[in-house]
Image (cartoon, rainbow, N blue to C red; front, side, top):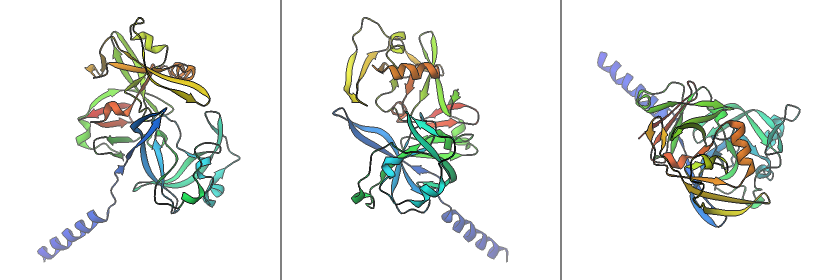
Length: 312
């Protein structure tokens, strides 16, 4: 009798383990040409389903954003009645770079195989690239929005860059607790990591939307850490929103440390943009650190206790 119970228990547990869905979210790197130069890993793309719609969508993971949102222009040619049904057009508006939006309330999302039920998503009417009508039903994923850190607040986010997967935990598994953690600041969901350069400790936002280099400063903060007599190297030049946009690079004079450990960062990029200067001043940071610096590591963001960890 005991033997039969053991067999039945084993079969039940085996069936249960196979029936459970994986909580890991697979991501892909998206490559693109910027001002004539191709970047293989420009953005992190997540597969997305909206409600029970049959379309294959994707969103960019942008931890430098504040709200998860959909692009109105990109969804323009889709017949999606759920948008009109759940759009809170009378509620408080949300603006992205001056573009107005309203919130979709209690909409069900699925990122890869992970469900995000009853989620509020900002819908920006006049934003994104229009998807042609003749391709909306094709199998390829169509970019229609941004996944922001509002989905991960008060949780642990683990990003396994080498294996291109990420996972959300309510409690952090033991194997990740041995990561090298540093205390961080947070504002509007954005994580700010302390960097020590020489005798200065400053903060940078961890921004998965910044994939042009490791460390992106601005045209004023670059002067704090470089020789003013050194010439800057021009990396990119082109038009952005009708304005000349240039990305430069300079050598940093002193080692860059995170949590008292030297990093391999020896240069920094910066732009000619006044908007970057204004943003950094408002956020009380010197710039952004991107995911490419952590490409061979697992990153753990503790949104509960405000810590940032890395594990190789």
